[in-house]
Image (cartoon, rainbow, N blue to C red):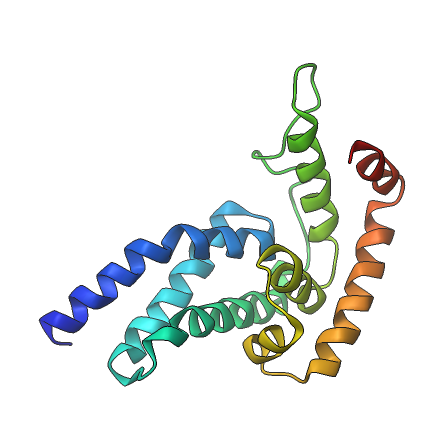
Length: 172
């Protein structure tokens, strides 16, 4: 790679690394895995950096690579079983914890229980703010698939949250 290409990639990486890591966390629910997944996405981008013609589409490319990595990893046998009940970043409900933090922790816990493809759609649609068309492009699927996965994902999230959903609704 030429020096100019390396500098352009370094600028993009510096500007977007936190956002990509956050998206990865929302998709997988584990900061360590999020670091690995973000690295996977950036390595894939680096390999194709000189071939990318539309620099405005870099975010979409990284997002699609990230979502695919999360879904592929979830299919691996050693990822099917969770050995940790709570993540260390999860807020504890000892006195003095802000309800926003508690609500966020509850929501993220419920999101972890949603199947990976549905979770990807929910994260892209509601947390990343993409519309149906952009989500379909990111996932390389039809808009109808995005709509059905959104409906199923929301149903799965409601089921996962159970009684916690009422607590979230009353807090808003």
